Each structure stands twice: as structure tokens, then as C-alpha cells.
Image (tube, rainbow, N blue to C red; front, side, top):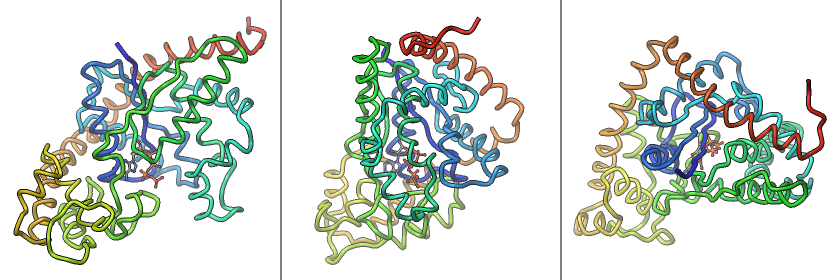
Length: 331
Ligand code: AQP
């Protein structure tokens, strides 16, 4: 069965609409016919400054979100990145074949560094995509289900894997990004020219585990466009089109159908329908997640089992890498 790898950072108490539609929902669907590895990427979460207690809480909360959304720990390997030291070990090796200029071209680094200022941005944030490449290559993944914002990092992963293979001998399978076209980039509800993002936050962010009243309020205050008709036109009507995308995704239909359904109706009706559709998924998701967090010992046991399964694969890849690179084996 083809292999899948993906992860999310424990950098917030809740995933947002983009994380769910762009990534997590795809993960759940892929586990039926793929051998899936889903990781809580806590090493990545310390690249931009963090609080240790928040990190601990959010790591378990993110694992519980995966489970609540339908990741099945019997079929998929669910684990925490720092439990498998091979990620950091492979990242070092890959960092040594990454060009400084190549890493400097990563747009996510440029955007986040611009927000934090040159002194605020860490070396960890700069090498983040190299660690991400290690995450993926360790498991010999065929597919990486992510949002559009991650496409460049998957390209880098392929470049690094291919470079290693040609320099030292074939070790890595080169992965393909798996980007769901319809939901590749969910936009901020207040600024529909920007992607919805945890770190930007603000009133345009909809977190699925948030208070239902606030979810509804944020959807109802979404910026819409001039005119009154519910038409799908991402260039001319980015706000309305984004809401239509969200509604179509949550109700399992297409934006064309949404457009037909809303012929002759206004933006207010559309927002009401979006809020209902989002809450129909968000409320039970939050309930399941809360129940899972009531038994942290069971959650930790599950993650320990996942780490064992992950390491069985990761250790094999790392051993091959160390051998090809020329490290003398430890006795
Ligand atoms: N707006 C989005 N639309 C579609 N997919 C999205 N993803 C993130 N935002 C959108 C996808 O969700 C996964 C989360 O990965 P992450 O935890 O590493 O977060 P991120 O990519 O850095 O994006 P966030 O969650 O919004 O955080 P920041 O604030 O850091 O930008 C990935 O698969 C991502 O593509």
C-alpha cells in the first residue's frame, strides 16, 4: 500500500478551518487505502518561540484532535515527533546537503521572518523545511497531504532526497504533494487575500474547537464583496467565494451547486448556511476531543505505541543514511 506522511504543529489550542479542510480531513480519507503516518510535529513548534506548558498541553490536544476527526490508531501510525529522535538526526544530515541560498528562498521563512524581524527569527525557523524534509523522507512516503502553502517545502523535500540519492546511493523514495484542489487554500474571513493562519490570528480565523457562539459570530462578520449575488468568482469576489468553498466542503457538494442553491438569495443567507455547516462538524469534534483529553494516560499509551511503530521504520532509513554517508557504525 502506498505510504502517506503528514503532520501539524501544536502551536494553538485548536485547529482552524484551513487545517481541517486542507489537511486533517484528507488524512482521514487517505487511511482507507494507504499506510499512513500522522505526526504531532512538536520539534517544529519550538521554532518561533513558545511556552513549555502550552506546548505540553497542545501536543496532547492536537493528538486528540486527530483522533476526534477520525484518524484511526489501529490503521494509522499516530505519534509525536520528539518521540522519534531519528527526525532530528536525519535533519542534520540533510542540512549538510542544503544550500544556504536554497533555504533562503523558502517563502514561508521569508514571511514569518519578516513578521518577527531579523533578530527575532531563529536558525530553527530557517532550517524548519529541512526538518520537514527529514520527517517525510524517513518514512519513505509516497504522498504528503497538505495545503497549498506547503507545496514549496515538498519540492525542497524532493530535491534533497534526490540529491542524497544521486550523491550517496539510492535510499529515499521521492514523495508527491497531495493537495485537495477545492480546499488547498482557505482564506482569512477578514482579509480574503491572505490564507487563514494560526500565527496571524485575528477575527478572520475560525477555530473549530472554539466556543460555537464565537464561531458563528466570526462567520457572520466575514468580509463580503460589493454586489449582492452569491457568485463564485475568486478574483472579483474573494470573500464570498471563500465562504462558498467552505460551505461546499462541509456539505460534500461543489461551489457550482452552492451557486445554484443561492440564486436570488443574499450574503446573509449564505453566512447562515456556512455557520450551520461548520458547527455541524465542529461541535461533535470538540465533544470527542474533550472526552479523549479526560484520559491523558490512555492518550499517552496510544502515542507510545505509535512512536514504537514509527521508530521501527525511521530507524531503518536512518541506518541506511548513516551507512551511505560513511559514518562508522557504533558497536
Ligand atoms: N488556510 C489554509 N488552507 C488550507 N490548508 C491550510 N493549512 C494551513 N493553513 C491552511 C494546512 O494545514 C496543515 C497545518 O500545518 P501546520 O500546523 O504546520 O501549520 P501551517 O502550515 O504553518 O499553517 P497554520 O496552521 O495556519 O499556521 P501558521 O500560522 O504557521 O501559518 C498543513 O498541511 C497546511 O498546509
